[in-house]
Length: 491
Image 1 (tube, rainbow, N blue to C red):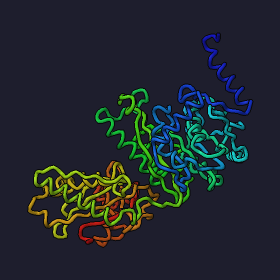
Image 2 (image 1 turned 120 degrees about the horizontal axis):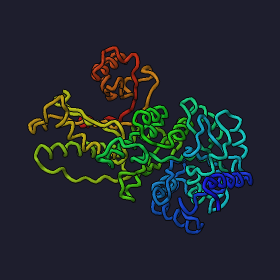
Image 3 (image 1 turned 135 degrees about the vertical axis):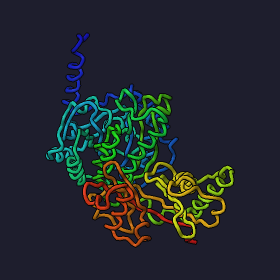
Image 4 (image 1 turned 180 degrees about the vertical axis):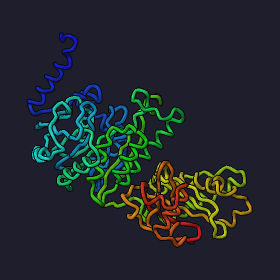
């Protein structure tokens, strides 16, 4: 029996033995997931079957949580089904380091295979040897011995993918933004059409045990807002904005570096789609100690999911009808009619939205939400009432005005950061200006309607934020978004 203090030494020696045999044997079996291969396969198949859906040929990557399967397996499955039955020559898995500090480095294990209860996965030695020549990449054996972030994804991939694949298992240390860009550039040559990129990350870790309790009431709602606010930057493929968001909110997203690397490495024509979202407290009931899970797919050749054709004429009419009926019901003291929108409809996509009211051509109210936190129709339903009755610039709408107003809806793409105000395009971009804790937003149609150029627009926006008219020139942060704009006046 080992004496006190020897357990760590024995474990380290055992780890070196595993590594010296050129096979890294996963230690997660029996705790993070079942050790019995039949039971494990059945559990994974059950998650995939219940997730439904089918393989998507355009999927080139996955963002998956990495908790024990009983907590996050169901969420992960909603993304993994997109590659079920597909074949890839190579899988690159990027995960964070939870146990070993590796500032500025990414570790690739010097092994020939990684073994799980479902069998051996050969590593792609040629790719790893080329990456080891890059200053950001190294082999740090101890980084892989107890690290679950990469290993937890492997049984899911073994069960879902058809045929064998070569593995590049990468454990990421803390990288600054330059390091993120350098790592992405190093990986890009190996991210071809026969390669699947998998990013492993849980989202917010909430509770005293994690040292993160930014709020104590309405925890479920505020966690959702925090998580999906951060994911909005992922969806926009905005690595800089995502890292800024994490820094600003303190959100405890453990895989922030792998996520940022992936965003920098994705092809220009790729898009990110949310597949599922969940929290551990939904199964444990303990909202004082909760971890959030996001599953998403990276899809090539799809472009922005909020293009000008992403809402059909019927969907636009349905949203405008919803907004008017909500306002009418509120004015007449009746309950708003029940609405049901198909989950496959464009109205059910998570998007930001503004509802604008005009009366005899003049602005009568405008309120919205920029981040995609909920289905578009739900955002329109809430913001229609806000625009009519809660815009502080106007008195609440009166019933006799109802026939004179027309409604306009702006469905928004996720905002992304820009390096300079000179990147802003009038007529295309909505603008969010932030400085010294103050911020303001203009929708894309504001400047053209007023006949403003870019600098004049920014002066007005700075004034709206409570800043001086020239304060936008230095020290401001800018985010831009695009909008699908449609209204009752469009016919």
